Image 1 (cartoon, rainbow, N blue to C red):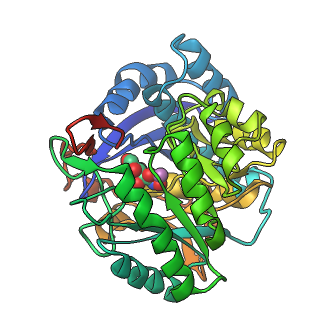
Image 2: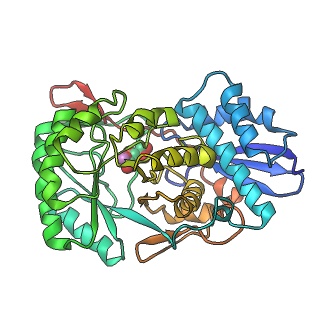
Length: 403
Ligand code: EZ4
Ligand code: CO
C-alpha cells in the first residue's frame, strides 16, 4: 500500500498568493492539491499543517473516500471555506497520487472523457464600454467561444471585474482592503447597452456571460435578466447573494436569462435547495473550495438529476493545480456546461509546470499520469507570502455593501 510518509504546505506569491499541499508516499510518488483561499490563505495553511497533516501520516493514500470522510465527519465542525479548502487539497493530492500510481491521467479514473475538451470562457473587461468591446474582440480573435463582459460603470471610479492590467486581473491588490464605491442605479443602466454593443460587434456565434458579483436584490436581478434577454446571455452569475436561496425563485419569476451561482459554496448542502428546486442553471462550485474532486463529483451527479450543468469557478486565485483538477473533472462529467479560465501570469506558470492546453476555445488537461501539474519548489521559494486582501464595497453614502 502507498503509505503516506510526509506532507507539507508550500505558500508562494508570484504576484498573488498560492497555497499548495504536497503529500508524499513511501512509493516515492507524491501528489499536489490547491488550498488557496483568497485573502485568508494562512488560515488554510495552518489548518493543514497544524491539524490535518498529523492525521495523514501512515495512512493508505489509495483510500481517498475514507480519508475524505475521516476529515469531514472526524473534525466534528463540518463545512466552512477553511475546512473544505483543506479537505479539497488532501483529496486532490490523493487523486494525483492514484493517477500516477495507475499511470493514467486523472480523467481516466473518473470514467474517461465524455468530450474532446472543455469549453472555457475568458474575461473581457475595460474601463469603458468601448474598451470592453475592443477587449472582447481580442478574445474572439484568440479563438474563445465564450466571453465574460465586465465594464467600468459611468460615474463610478472603479468596480469589480475591471483590471488595471490589460491581460491579468487580480482583485486582492493591497495589504489592507481597498474601498470601492457602488451605485446599483448606475450599474443597471450600464449593462444592457454593453450587451447590445457586444452583439453588434461580435455577432451571435459567441457565448456572452456576465458576473453581477452578488450586488442586486432579487427584483433588481429580475429586471437586469429581463433587460438582457434580447442579447441571449449564456448566464447571469451571482445575481444576488445566496444565503437566502428563495431569492432565486423571485428572479426566475421574471426572466428566462440562465442563472449561475456557487463560486463561494463549499458543500453540497449549499447547493441543495437551488438544485433540487431547479432555481439555477449552472453550479459554479469548484475543486479547491468545495471539498475536492470527490465532493464536486457528488454535487455534479445531484445537479445532473435536476437539469443543472457545471460551470466551475476558475479565477486566477485558483492555482494551476486547481485548474488542472477542474479540467479532468470537466471533460469527464456528463453534465458539463463551461469552465471559467483566467490565464495565470508567466511567473505563476513557471512555478507550476503543467500539461493542460488551450486550443480553439477549448481546454484539455493533457495525458500525463495524475493531474499533469508540478510545483517547482526552488522557484516558489523566491516568492514569499505577501498579505493581500480583496476590496470592500460601499454605497455612495458610505454604507458597507457586498463587494
Ligand atoms: O471575485 O475569485 O467569477 N469570478 C469571480 C472572481 C472572484 C475572485 C475572488 O477571490 O467572481 O473574480
Ligand atoms: Co464570479
